[in-house]
Length: 301
Ligand code: RIB
Ligand code: CA
Image (tube, rainbow, N blue to C red):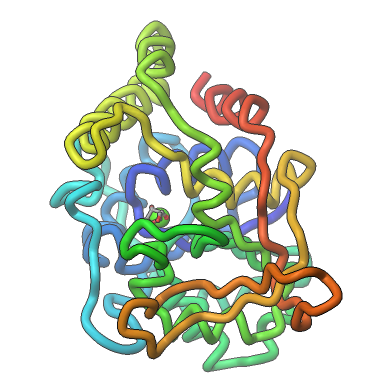
């Protein structure tokens, strides 16, 4: 099985991604970061999900704030706890450490993938401490950015917008980097029919997922008038565990740091191939959404 470390900010879709990763990869550890909610909440949620899954994956707490500016959260989507709307598994788990960056740097060898599902602060701090780190890991798969429109501003996606300086450092570090942006992740969407199907299954993971999707659909209905939710973070897991399901193209990607309207934008060079700047990422453009959703639902059996 592919060995991975999941850096995340649970977060509803992060929780589904953790379920998927634990089914299809060897998860060496989880590092948490401020993002969807403050660090204390995302860390508590990661611990709770490991209890729900009954796995002994260590959780290491990471950065509580971005490299520059103030922390930004997405509580309007995920709620005050960062994972509202679900019955929380009881547990007495605690973090393995408060130094997620050290844990990332200790990634054992070249066949470990880093799957980043939140702002890239922890990864940027690891690169700052040891630029050679990116050559000691197999690669980085991120949910972040977009080759089309944003979700937090017209052009910026939340994970990048929450820490653009960190994203710039990761994209320029020379890693083997796959970018699953909104242009891809919006192809994988949950519906109320999926909630009904999960409610018929009699196991705690399916019950948890049904509650989670039902809550998310309610938030999306309030925010955009549609009872559906894009499964953003699971796409970055599938890019590592099932790469055959995702079509990517080599692209030059830079992060806008200065623009009044465009700060946090992933500027993807999509000109004709003869004119493109040298690629620094594999940008995902298409996913086999049917097969991907089957894999997501199977991890709740
Ligand atoms: O823009 C979507 C991303 O922001 C997802 O990772 C979601 O969990 C939030 O972190
Ligand atoms: Ca996330």
